[in-house]
Image (cartoon, rainbow over the protein chains, first blue to last red):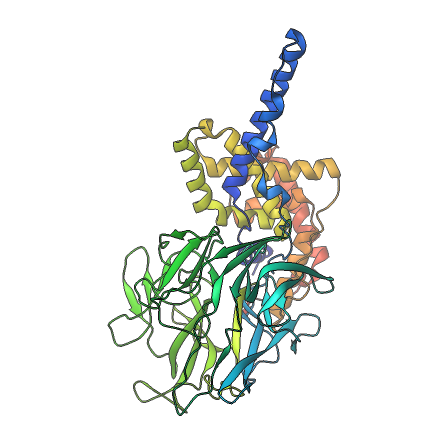
Length: 408
Length: 169
């Protein structure tokens, strides 16, 4: 290979690792343009005023008229990690070293145990593990809830569930910044651009429940009271009341999540379709954006918007991928002896990270459906890559772990 | 700019920004923050002339190239953005070469890198590169030659038979 060809290939390969823009490029350009025009007008108006000695209300035209929100935001709390290499620990469950592929990484996972608190009640207690980049391994944290921002450096956490304040670590060695909350919260999630936090507020511990009798378990009435959005630029936390819908069947938790672009939040809708209900950050119900409420998946549209995860395909497989341009749906069929059970994240436009079991017969699994591992599958037909060892039983405390996928 | 023009601008940015970001990423030597700043600055200049711009993508690219080169002219220093230190090596010589090459590309001057990006990433002929950068064809040719020579110095592996991206060469 000549040096020309080498440089050409290196540049093309490297360009694929360019991160997506973290901000509203068009909106910022338009705002800057408006502000520049207003400044120009203000200078001209001021000069005229000096000549004719007339009062000119120039200040009204200055930045207040077109605030540049982007300028004041803490935009670089967590920079995207440009790496897209596949990292796997196929012999460990839970993994000891980083699990990542394409643009998605597991910077945190949790295990859990059921702790009896009275004769008929128990609490599901989570233990969070976070990836330590310096040591190259996952390490146990003392926190009751954890979410890591894109890039893997910044973290938000709760000391207990529910908690009246949220802690934010803006970097690996940064000091904790505490933000007080008006109402207690039991979950926190970073916005996709890492400038805001979304907390789900509860009046009681949502992980408390009745002790199961046989195979059934009574749920507590929902204690959800709303959500809080924290703007990290100024630390302001605004609570929006939004209790659980009384028409929805009760669930353990009813947390809110961010939409892919961070402009809306959503909660599960248990009587689909659609599968999700959306609200703006003021708590007003909003129409369902395209390609977001076919399944309960966090991100259904592929990063480039060309493919969509869909639920029941009616073709024998539970899950499928719809080509957005043609509308054609392709069921996710078994691959290399693995049965795909659940999709976790898009690695990139052509690859998915899924839970898969070892196939037994046509639709069975070796060791049962709850024994599964993380697998990287290639929609273009490449060999699947195991990313983790097998969970012994995904539903049982002590035999399972739950990964949290975050953009790199 | 009226509402229809603003909508057209937003659509253009929405559709083309991933490709433009890739270009900005290469021009800045793999620095995601500098890349976003470069692209944002170019888009702000573009929106100011939106009505008169017939080929917006070509215009944005030209602004980025010239901006990058003029920054370098003013500062007279090389862009030293570092590729990720912890890029996961896959154990092959190809992966090592890739990391070494990225590091070397990041250490070129902005002008040298811009010429290589135009010639090898955009696949443009020398005359077109000269027009975009506002210099002569001879300058493009000599800059390309010097840039490749500098890459060979920064990445001695290029002078040896090697594996790249998993393929024997």
